[in-house]
Length: 87
Image 1 (tube, rainbow, N blue to C red):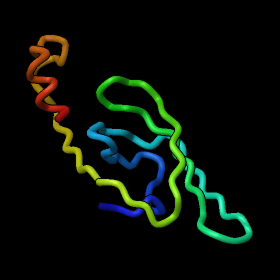
Image 2: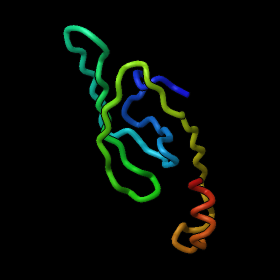
Image 3: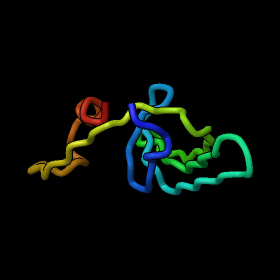
Image 4: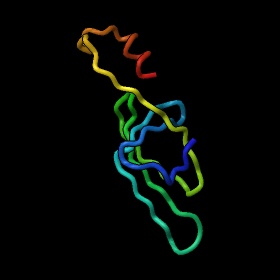
């Protein structure tokens, strides 16, 4: 788990069972109380974008993604293999 204060552009995290990549990050601190962290992120499975506001102190599950060069073009890979690799 990582604190939402550690989210930055390019960080990948899991939220509600989906993988997201941070596109934009904004940290706003008003006079009193907790800071608000506004994140714009892309769902890596569906490609849709979300905007989510977190309070300071909340945390999300961090994800480590490994990339490698494939000898097969991804268009020829069966869909079930691509789903396995994304999960």
